[in-house]
Figure 1 (cartoon, rainbow, N blue to C red):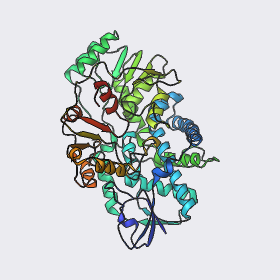
Figure 2 (cartoon, rainbow, N blue to C red):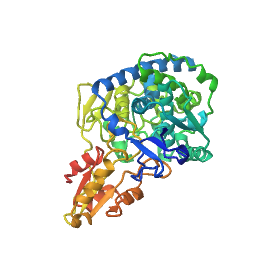
Figure 3 (cartoon, rainbow, N blue to C red):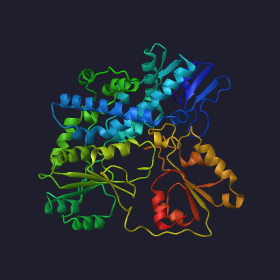
Length: 504
């Protein structure tokens, strides 16, 4: 019996029986359709949903131990002595996401080996340089792709089996080319350099060392000016998009990584073994260049406050820029909620964990916890007015459906969960008069940026063309205004937006 961990026909050529991890593709069908092959499906959402509070707490504790060792090694590699908080701001987002993905994949690998014993494993021939991300933004995109998950599942199986002898190396130049083209299309997660506008240049001259920095705040320029003035600070506009380079791997530096790989906890040991070969190059090979870019744009005095909605997760330049101010002890770092799911999931996402771990205050959409860090606030003081059309139909808003999940809190929005079946059931149970007026709006999918998400065309085929698909060509509020009510199928920004508008 062979193990298949990706939708690539070359992985199951000339075999009679296979165990397939998450074998239902983005089209809602099992991707091995050869009647001569016996197929056994392993659906990761069914297994991962059984995680206990104790397991998740142990995962978080082990991750923190590994992260602290990583910080020590990064300081050694760079000849620095930055405190823990500095590196938590700079590299913590990638580490939190990577650790959670690794924990999930290892848990599935354990289930496969415990249930089916030793399996032959077909492994695509991919090089280190081909797989290693440059930035956290690129890593986050790769974590959702089939080819990266094929790689990490094989690594997990080999780790548990303590051997790679059952691997069958598969040469597939087509996959190598696809991976390279995808990484080039997303520019390795690097920013697209943009020249400063005349207004930005003028404001920088008027206020070279502001007391308050509002960066990555989703507001109009006028609103940002007003916010600055209310905080008794001269306004500035910020752009963290200097040109950065994709650096080749420094094998010597990575092979000399001094992180203990001994641990009685399997997950912790596996995570430690993966760090040297998976740490994005921006934090090692490209870190000096990143620091140089930050140095060229750095202000001379530490601001009293840095506030952001969107830059902490994936903007490498901003993370280093803000970390330098924060660790001085003079600057407070504040973040604001910018999406759904925070404060309501049983198991926190890597994003929520990361933000709470690095800020001095977190402005939520109204929820609070036992922490003094979280301050409940309103979503917004005003909003675009829209109301339901009494003669309209139903708008069903979908989540970001993928084949591979990167957080425990999103297992239900996956092609191998019951999500697509429930969607089909919902549509089929609607009376024809209502179904004819029903519209489905998928979470934006892009063949370039996010091909791992189910597209509108795929949803249309899955539902046999029975309902209209809204591909997002018009604003969501405009689409809501043409319908009578909405069904929002996962916790996201649409929920509080509709509540504020009194939209059903």
